[in-house]
Image (tube, rainbow, N blue to C red):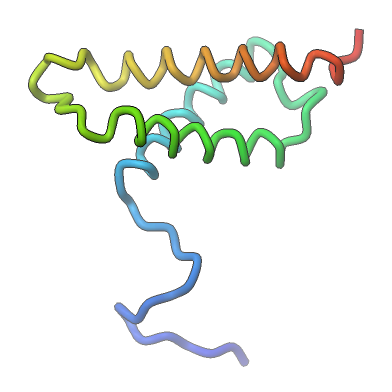
Length: 102
């Protein structure tokens, strides 16, 4: 049988909810909508997309981590991350266009 951990004991590679995790969730939602439009998984492996989504979530946090979204000075979080994700997805699709079947 596997080793049981006590409640609250540190588990390696455990995901915690933080700003980067929230960014990943929101970017994944945008990806899901864009996938319905462009069938993004048809020509680019899903594992490649997963790695990019995580990369972009971290990158967004690095760029906007100090933003106070509640102040109104930085705009609206959901609008900003949606625009960011769409741009990243479309740019990545263009970079990978050599893989896409004609």
